[in-house]
Image 1 (tube, one colour):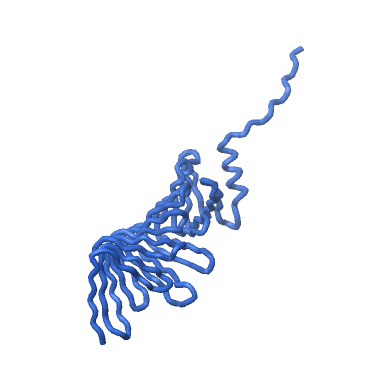
Image 2: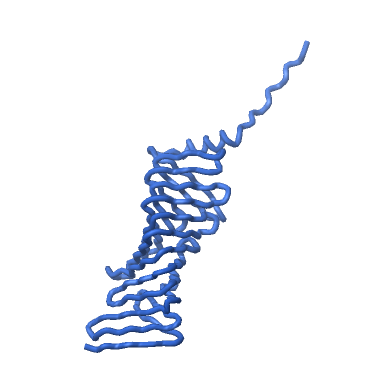
Length: 231
């Protein structure tokens, strides 16, 4: 009589495991997907999710939000490539950097962000607003493209850069902003600052301009030119 084989242990398909994990993270009508990239957790939520290319691409649709460290990105739709860590965002892009009491917001038309290293580029009608510490004043910036590095700690504004603060307008081809030092470095154009206050009108230009945003103290370096009209 043939001996009956003992039952073998069940081997689950990787696809089934992925689906099981996703089903377990479904929360009140929203899809939630948690990833771990370069030791930094990233969470994406949305109204709907499609799994494409055998799970390599996850497409989130409706009220989509990506959160990683101090950075939050929202969009109408996102596509997340789980092989490369790249996320593409489309429609109503909003970026929020939050650290302590400091909040910086940015808006654009499209986004491409890498969860592996916390870098990204945002294009189309770029606007940035940072609420200045301990005041209701804000720093406003517009440009053609905005690059983000180190999970939002550093911004790089590219082409047609215009920065507005109370009494001050600055223009340049490029601007580099560090959230930790609160400094902006302007290059190209050449960079120029126009200041209007109760004392009068003044212009300053040079090869480079450094601005401390909280105090509005600025330094002009190289080929400095000034123009002042006192009241």
